[in-house]
Amino acid sequence: MNTINPRLDRIAYALMALMAVAGSTGLARAQGIADTIPANASANTYGKGWQCDTGFREDDGSCVVVTVPTNAFLTDSSYGSGWKCKHGFKQKGDACDPVALPANAYISAASGDRWLCERGYRRGGETCAAINVPANGYLTGNTSGSGWACDRGYRATKGACVAIAVPANAYLAFTSSNPGWECDRGYREVDGACNAIEVPAHGYLSGRSYGKGWECDRGYRKSQATCVAVALPENAHLNFSGNEWECNKPYRKRQNACVLGRP
Image (cartoon, rainbow, N blue to C red; front, side):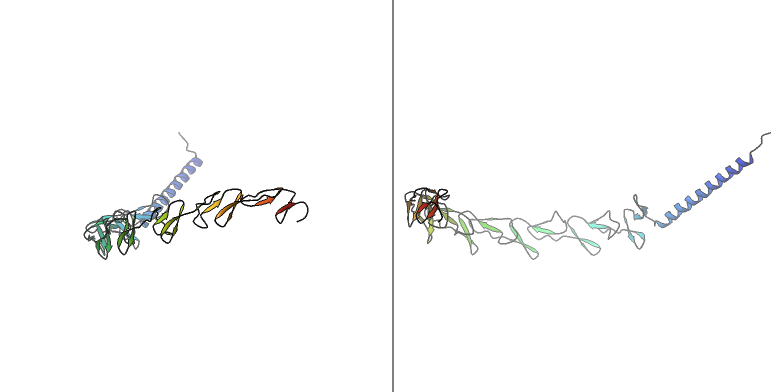
């Protein structure tokens, strides 16, 4: 006859009781979680909380069906209206109305619910007006300003492109500091003309727009409109610029000579 150990029997009974309590607690917890998620919603994959299923949106703690109007589609967002208008339609209240396209316009690819004017046209209220490009001009593609610019050799004047009168010994140059042209090298502007720069002997063109337009060679200095040789006294040499002199060390300059001692 087998004898059951009373102690082991008590341990087994206790384990079974613990398992029953744990099971009922887990069931109650799962039931509690399920009770907090409304219909047509699912628990978030990460973290706590829940979100409405596709086709539903949150409304005061519950998930209501999204009513999608004609020419619209469902979005992945559980908040807001839950839908957006298709390309070429614009939301108006709870409906999607077609975008009214004027002549010479197209639907914006970026937004899909507004229009832009074709090249060569610009917006004027709710229409696209043609840009009037004058003769010797071209479209710039800019929506601001006139929308056109003049060809090379012409300048905008009162809505027209007028030819730039380039004087002799000059060339076209479009900068803000000149009348549309610049003088060739060796010439400078005087009263709308390009006059030759007279370079004296032992001189060269400086390329500067100011001053006389020429400089003297090294060893020469300016004297009115000529270049005269720099007279070097004894114990002296030409300075950095080359158009004056300075004394050799330890000599010091005294009037037009180089002497030893204090100046």
